[in-house]
Length: 145
Image (cartoon, rainbow, N blue to C red):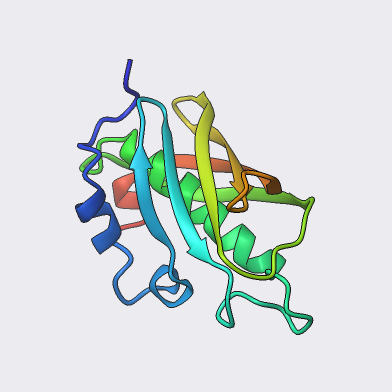
């Protein structure tokens, strides 16, 4: 059974990235399942660290983008929104080029918190980074003016 309260429309979701960090990093949402959301990010000059490897912060930006968007899609945006509370990441393999794909899946969808696991893999499917994101669910009026 799908967990989404909002229509999982990739074109609409990708449009949310206009004029944001996600656009600068080249992050694109690519697929949505019943209980997961996936997106890609290029491994290039925009996302490299000085030694030519994928920057850990770029991986974390992809993870937070996927988990935060997933969280938002499970809520009624007229009543509530999700904001990041905590994120951690383990970088397990380097990447120098190509594209990485992140897949976010909800581990816990509560009234006041959500926990998401985001797995980022290279083009061969090997794990590059695994992240856990905790979101706080708050009334819309608390963050939107």
